[in-house]
Image (cartoon, rainbow, N blue to C red; front, side):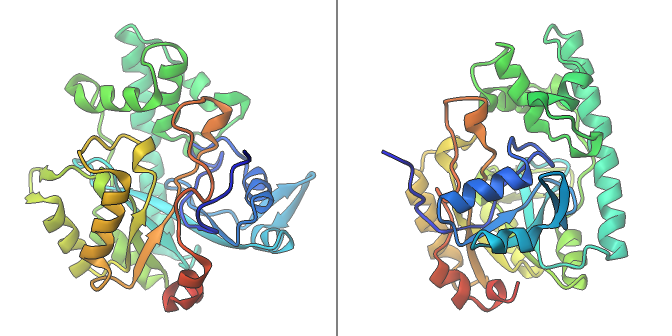
Length: 312
């Protein structure tokens, strides 16, 4: 049976501009073939594309999506909190020319390049050879150093047989202090502030990938208390519908239970209850835990009836 999306609005996905395996055009073409109505490109820590390549010509990305019968949201997924894993903020509708946004982007990108390159060197020293050149040309797609994402390293570890899956590789790196090369990530409250000043909105991605208990040099709190801190800081939304069953979530709740709990806890506390698949075109590299466009998301009715989303 052919795949049919559960939701026609998917507000979380990735392309070859970070760690996805579809080019932006391929992503939009695939989404259109599935009948999607609203899709978002939210690559990690890189400014969203204004233009995409179509048959050798650079075309306005939003216009191209319109020709396919879809609305495209151009966003960015900011990785935050140096000492806490998976605190990711998805931002939409901000001025990409904001000096604050661009300055923050430069800081994030350089830290990312330095730490990921150091990780490949350390893994190689420890008997898991991965070259920086392999990372830059992963899946035979030349990438700029600033477009590299850590998941590419995880993918390579699995493909080389060092772990069974990319998620196993992520957990191996995360749970082995020797491999923990931390890159400097911004405070999420700072991201919320500068995105708001640039006219945008901010949504917390996959909240239940954050550890249930958070302990850092400056924090000792529960996940719920941590999210409360973000809401007080102006967080606009939180992701409920998400592919927890296909990521590194290791708690006891089912995906459906998490979705229900997030909606119960936050519907009256934030303006947006978002959703997205976190699509990476995983099917091109694996048959395991493949995430599909529209597998999670929101309905067109919710999107267009929500004042903040419909204004994007």
